[in-house]
Amino acid sequence: MKIAMYLTVILCIIVIGVLAFVRLSPTDAAQWHVPVAQTDSQDMASGAIRVMEADPDALARVDAAARDLPRTRVVAGSVEDGRITYETRSKWIGFPDYTTVEYADGLLKMHARLRFGQSDLGVNRERLERLLVAAQEG
Image 1 (cartoon, helix red, strand yellow):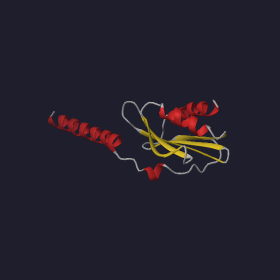
Image 2: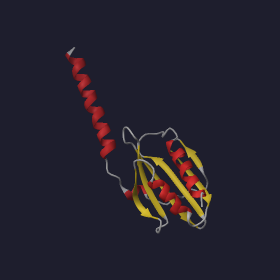
Image 3: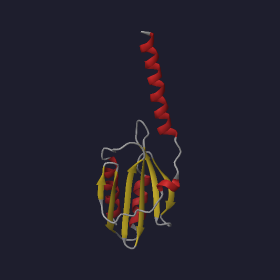
């Protein structure tokens, strides 16, 4: 009986430690704020990429829409720089996802990906689809 109680306490400590690590681990902007190299839209288990022709104001519209997303903050970049990276955290556990949006030469490129795990269950794809609507509203 005591062993089961000790194992339960140890398991709880491990779970709390993992959750604290996910919630409190710092973001290295240099790791996430990188150019979107892909030239075609694609869906992956860990995220999604969207590439589309757009007008020069599309990045500003996407920036405004991204800043309105819940639990989202700018990690690096600006509209003037032509590239912005955002961090969006999940509601309950606080898993961070990173979305990089850039505009150059008439193309708007967006790459949304997870930081921890192997599957984002489609949330990054859905986020990009919402941001695409903002990009096309011009």
